[in-house]
Every structure is written in C-alpha cells, then in structure tokens.
Image (cartoon, rainbow, N blue to C red; front, side):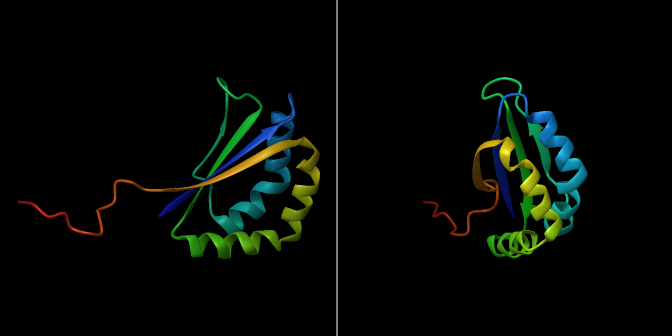
Length: 109
C-alpha cells in the first residue's frame, strides 16, 4: 500500500473557493477513478493557504493506471480549468508504510 500526499498552495483567501469547486466539480470524478480520499486537510499553523489530499493505492502501478484514467476524464478537466488560477504551487509525495515486515530476514547471533 502507498499513500499519495498532494499538497496544493493556493492564493491567499482562495482555500474555501477551491474546496467549494472541488465539492461541486472535482470530487466525483476523483473519487470515481481514485477511490475515496484517505483525508483532505487544511493548514491552520505553518504554511497557510495550503490544502493536503491523501489518496491510497495498492501499488505504484495501481496509482499510475488510476491517475491516467482521471486525466482522461472530461469532468475532471473542467474542474482543473476552474481552479487553475487559484493555485500557486503543488507538491506530490508517495509515502510507503514503514511498519511492514522487512523482506530480508535479519541475522541473529
């Protein structure tokens, strides 16, 4: 399992507008292709005007296939066109669970 963390930096004051557009236009195509969000967060302390989305995938291949389908979706393209001017930047990270068993057994004396 991997977790994708997508962080969007927005123009000051644009967070609520982005979230409203996401609810109206973006959420349905994203969740249809990517599955339900693992979480959507705003930042109250630190780097303000930031949204963080977490999406869960079974593998990098699963992620690539789902993202490819999403990018081909006309409804999602309409959402992207509506929010483009609200964005200042974006950062993506793929997080891998660290509590899974080590695939190589450790040697014990």
